[in-house]
Image (cartoon, rainbow, N blue to C red):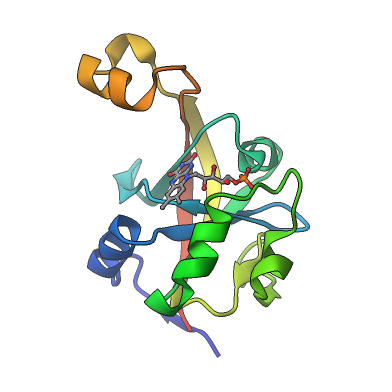
Length: 165
Ligand SMILES: Cc1cc2nc3c(=O)[nH]c(=O)nc-3n(C[C@H](O)[C@H](O)[C@H](O)COP(=O)(O)O)c2cc1C
């Protein structure tokens, strides 16, 4: 049974886990899992928005370009190894949910799946996206994060629901 939370109820837990082993961005059918460490949760256009940052080289990028929604799943520290696998292996050549032994469930409000073993997860509908603009990125950040381009696409996900497991 999943308990619906307020969209900002686990804001601090979300930030802490992103800053640790990361979270799992789930998109596509069959679902692919990608570890993310960068995301923002806030208010835009009178809506609650979860933004994720995905480099075009990722398989997840191909999926999001053709998807209407995504989930972001947060796991406990007992899944450090699985988060590392989903952050190094690619869905181009492996089925990461099977590799990690995760149980996938269909979304409660949308079509993207989520990881059953999560502590909580967000379900989001994509309502906007834009590529980071190199001409306005501070020089230090350019050198550190974009020496060879591959600028992130930012996907704006309207939060449809946050669920504690
Ligand atoms: C802790 C951690 C955080 C990461 N955060 C991001 C991120 O926010 N955006 C991104 O594009 N890649 C991020 N990555 C890299 C992807 O997870 C990695 O390239 C993955 O293999 C891509 O999977 P895919 O090709 O199946 O989409 C992160 C990796 C780790 C280990």
